[in-house]
Image (tube, rainbow, N blue to C red; front, top):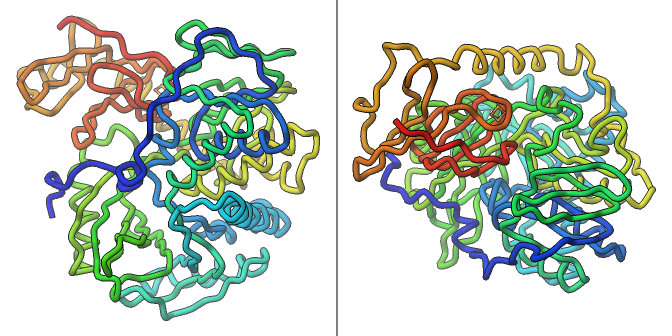
Length: 508
Ligand code: FES
């Protein structure tokens, strides 16, 4: 199915709309802890600290829980595709055990918070599965079942699931959960305010000076002084340890539609086959459930996003023939080169600045885990798994050699190869309404978008983060940077970091 007529909106955003925005600070601020970023990692950290009596401020460039967290699949599971077999080879059985324990603790923590605060967030217990349809891949799944069991999860290898199509084999882990991420997080933010915390929306932070105290500077020139600072902006907007060399951005598409409750699977599923397919359902009322299918991951800036949406919706309709697609949206994840999130001190010498990033596609359990880990570090009580996630860990060839080099080669290609469009490349006249292209103007590149009324809008094609060249995503009407995933509106405004400054307006 061509999904161009399916409204491009996230079900989570639509069914948990935000109230009036919390205004930016109207003067300088002094707090114990400032958290930059109001997604699940930032809000979980802020809430954990506020519940320990710290005075906390959350600074969010846009709206709370509206970025990556508002566009996720919202599974809460410790089973992350094939992570345990990978971890036992790269971090040993102790590393795999700590990963399982930390992610399971995060799920239990979320369940405890839901119960304690009485949050109505469509919480459902569900089993998580990683499956293979292709019999040739079943050994990987069998190995994952064994590794996950060794790591302490209640994992088993099964060949029967409640999917309406056959699988060759699956790892099944019971006792996991799914929920509505925005209902959970907006309630958490309300409780943070009740505990004396502050939230500032529309507040982009552009500067950080580490010290005692640390000082953050906002785009509007306000200073926020804090004894401790946490950077939880998905891709870190401050990157003193060059983490960008160990993070790789990946966009992923989501289609969702209504199916009959009697035919809806209750488990959560993912397969690494076919550029990843993830399936879950959510309550929808009237004897129906919402089927949510994710997949088709790609590097930001890919030209064929509409075709990918079509492939994903065709896949969903072939396997769930009665589904009526109602929503489509896209998420963005950052994969770390060793597949383990980076949570801890911002750089080797940092004593009061912390970072949480690199959650791959598992930012919900990862974000809640980061909240627990960072609040304990700040309180001076490192947890058992602090070392596993420490961003200062030494890279090893075994852990990340291949993916590190692959990522660096890709960045270098976009940094050098894309810089000057060829003379035979597109001209503004070639750009169709709704589309965009980088065109050659003089000796350099200019990012040009033609709106649906035929008007041209031109901005610099050079990403304000580290200078790679952006590309246009026609399906989502955004300029995207393939190097580290910054995204910009057609007029150049920042939609997503690590860039914090807009693309400069250009005259054609
Ligand atoms: Fe880093 Fe664009 S996001 S150069």
